[in-house]
Length: 122
Image 1 (cartoon, rainbow, N blue to C red):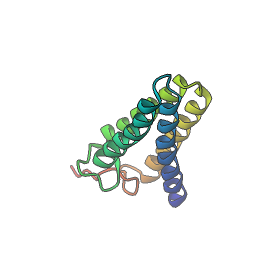
Image 2: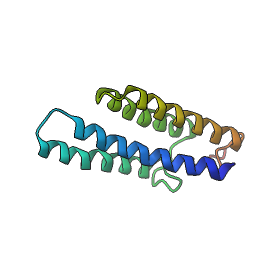
Image 3: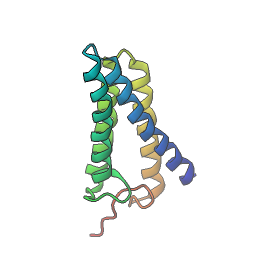
Image 4: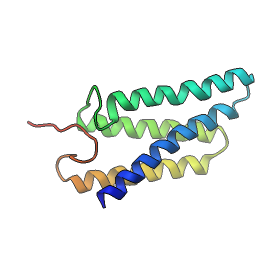
């Protein structure tokens, strides 16, 4: 079960990046600006994800902040999709991310071992 949740999680991360590219290319601005933003926006999200969210994050966050940051990133991308005229797709993306994250947290019990969240020992 956990493997399926992690596979879904990876797919959702890829969808997040694709949604950012789609949003950037739908903007009503110069083509060069759209293309530049279509490259820069996903790269910025990859940096944030790698630094704070990934299983081997360079700067692990406390569990609550780890969950909150993920929800904020997915909500931000959902807003971008809504702005690009894809509200339903944004809602589906956030819904799937919330359900997957909730399932990962529920399966991990009190800790988040196996979710990618940093281990916290008190």
